[in-house]
Image (cartoon, rainbow, N blue to C red; front, side, top):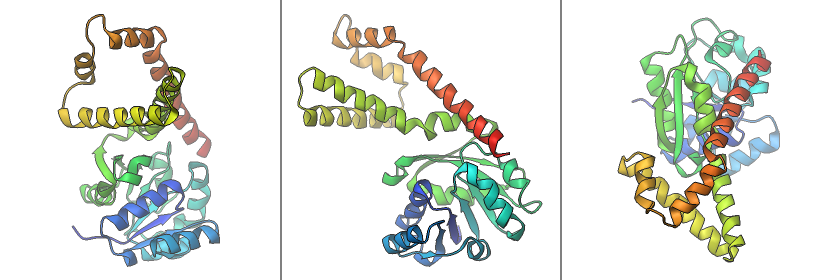
Length: 270
């Protein structure tokens, strides 16, 4: 597949992860552009990655693929300024959580293809979960081009766009939930008398090992959980306490809250 030139417009935290992943994958540095609101941020990116920072206007003209990495609440103003100037042969890839492809289609030239992507911060270690949905004018070729950008930083998956708010709640915000669980395990280990460094190493490696088993074994999580749980044993006692604390209901409520917030962001942006 031809490697397209890519501009990350609004290279904040998530945009920088994509930018860094593109370079780690071997894409030539001259094919990667970035824009930033603050000149000092642009200079930082140029020094760190050797890329050429450009203005939004130059990015729109020079790059084949425009990755929009601004905050959702800033997307409307960006498109108001740049939308009419985007040539019809570009591909727009949105990282803006909560914003549907129709939001961009309404503000860009008619027929311009848009692909919506929800990725997550494990992109930093090439373990992202990037989920793609094509807009009304996105073809198979456009989706494949977008996948080529995100595949080097982890796994990619396609879903219908109506599922993207749920994706945002599950995998987009998901790393924070897992970090909270590990944090809670560390604090509990300290409470039980372990040195903090020991509790940290035990919890982190347990999380890493368990995640790899989930990914590589192909087993349902319940099967793996049962394999650890002996009748009337220590794990059974711990799981009973977690169930009594409503851990499943808490996760369900948390994901619903995240999904609803994604919908609110879209409504506010309009």
